[in-house]
Image (cartoon, rainbow, N blue to C red; front, side, top):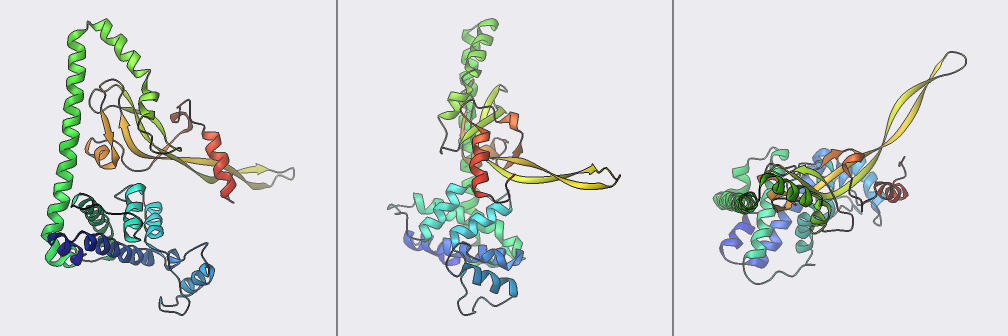
Length: 316
């Protein structure tokens, strides 16, 4: 990471996009190793099971035939283990794609800066898990890392303030041009358009939205994201004819929602990405929801469950 920061000062964008993700790959694997060495096994790959057995047995990484996961899989596993992982899937996938040479980096500092900042955020998330001193890790690049992270946060907060100011003016202009009954009618009409407004910001075929009070106007907007389901089992007891009791498994689905944007149909506030959601004090990490929350008429939870059950051998 220190080499990546040094390359940043030298405008060596290729080195930035090589060394920063390389640092994250090593950090990610170290953290997964600390959680459980088996998390480094490349499941589904050739010799994956053999590597899993070696890792569980405690064989060193230098063992003959040992295979471990790549950066993309490492980041995915970390994000799956912890909902507070600092960047969304699209951005950690980009880090891996850059590391693997699958994404062309344009000339200029804009894209490498975004890559470096994302890597710094992930590094700050991983460093404490390894009981490593942050200043030692960044070394002479510490002040640069701090400045880039602070500047990123300030930029996000300024963007959100401008968006909220624009939405506030939108609502104020609406109030000034209508009497109270007309205003209420317009608000009701706009709120009825919340599903179509949300759909404008869907980024995948799996996306949907849930109700969320707007942080600016207080009316009902939509939090946009991707739902996920996981099979779970609770236990009850059943009495037999002889008076004894037996445990009975009760299968059910836990429903999670990964937010990525917000749209308000009333004041027209639009927030894009976890960073902007967090700056506006809206949910920005995975949250558990109930079936009624997923009320988008174009979304079918049953279809999602059916699709999931085809792949999850433990599905219920």
